[in-house]
Length: 162
Image (cartoon, rainbow, N blue to C red; front, side, top):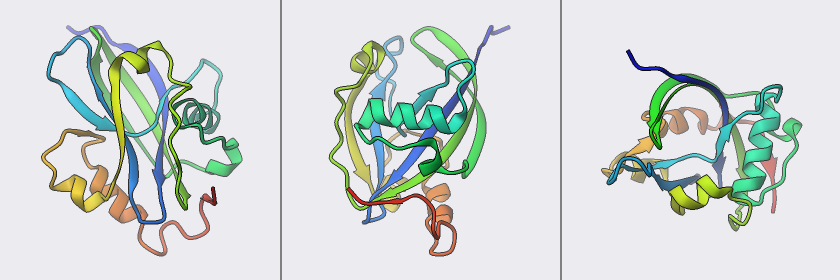
């Protein structure tokens, strides 16, 4: 039986004016060749709210500073199990949607693990991601974005200019 480390996380679907989502290209140091694209975000401190954690992670990983109120309520949640660097995690994660006109990503706030396991970042059009053949998380990301980015789905949510 696999022993899991329980973890709560918050992630941000950061979408620019062209409808592209920001993803990081990372890899698992313990599994050579297992690379993937994923959204900004990460684990929460014990008493941290999902919105506060998402705002903190976004600032650390991209340089974009928002308040938890700027992020609003989660637009989607899921539970996943995955290995990373030799540890198995069972994680509940909340996703927040935030739109920017554009953003120049600043990764100076990466921690040691992020510096060791993130190779690049890119703004992906959801349709291109869907047919790319690349591994990405969450697995249904293009469909989720298609649903969330419908003109009525995100009206009035998380608008910001840079």
